[in-house]
Length: 110
Image (cartoon, helix red, strand yellow):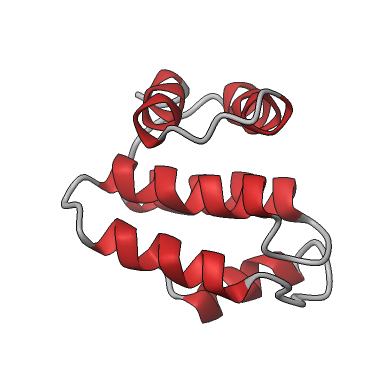
């Protein structure tokens, strides 16, 4: 599982790595650790990064990059366009339900 430091480093690929809502990210990591299902763990992180805007800039790109890190770590195939679109959908429709985010992620991987 990624750490706060790992996710900050991912954000630095797109922005300055400035956390503005560290408590949301820490809560997401804590909640994710309670699940053995990696897609559920990822759903918590995506929700935190995309909806709670944990970084000053680059939240959408960071959310997609975190998804790619998890998917690649679990040796799954993915459709980058679906992963990008689901991130935008989560944000625009304010989808906060973990089960729904999990289903959306599952739809973009194989």
